[in-house]
Length: 248
Ligand code: SF4
Ligand code: SF4
Image 1: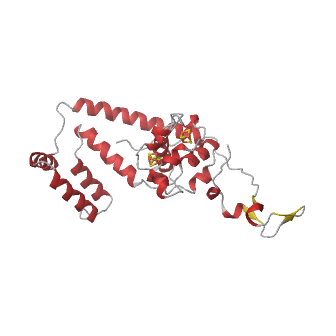
Image 2: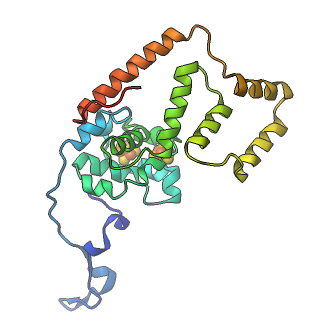
Image 3: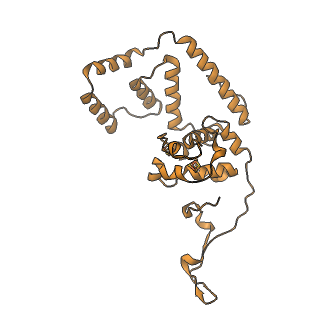
C-alpha cells in the first residue's frame, strides 16, 4: 500500500519544477511535483517478528493500512508526526532506520485506546505502540520513557500490595522523574477533588497513603506474578536476540 501523506516524504526526496511545459501544457509548480526514486538496502527482516514477540504487538500482521487508528488518535490530533498507521507500515516492511527517526515520540501514546476501538482488524494499535516503545528501550535506542517508568511503578505497586493507591503512586512517580509535587495543574486537580469528595472517602484515601495497605493473603499471588514476569521478560530478551538481563 502506498504512503499517501505528503508530509511523510522527506523534503530532499521531493522534486518540483517551477517552470515546466510538456507537449505545450504548462505543468509548473505543484503539477510537476515528483517523488525521487530511492533504493532501500537496510531492511531489518526481524523487526516485525521482534515487535510481535512483545506484549501488545502480537496482531501487527493483521494491519491493512486503512489509517483509522491515526485518524482517531488523540496525540495525532495534536502532533501529526505521531502516526501509528505509518509506524506499523514501517515495522511491517522492516524499515528500521525510518522508524528510528521518530523514536523520541513513539512513547507519547496516552493509551486512550481510541485506535483499538476503531481498528477494523483487531490489530490493537495501542499495544503495538507500547511494544514498539519497549523494543526501542530494550534495543538501547531510547532511555526508559516517562510512560514506561510510570507503568513500572504502577505494576510494582500492584504486584507488591495487590492494590492501587493513586496518591502514593503519583508521589513515587514524581520523585522518580524529578518532578515537583507543587505543580499548578496538580494542585488545581487536588483542590478540585478535595472540594467534591465526601469527607469519609478523603480520610480513607489519606490513611491509605500513609499506611500502604495490602490485600490479605496476597503473598502467594505476588510470588506467582513475579515468576510469570521473570519468565516473560526472559522469553522477550531471547526473541530480541539480547543477552539475559537483570531479573526483578
Ligand atoms: S486501524 Fe487497524 S487496520 Fe487500520 S491502519 Fe490502524 S492498525 Fe491498521
Ligand atoms: S492509544 Fe495511543 S495510539 Fe491509540 S489513539 Fe490513543 S494515543 Fe493514539
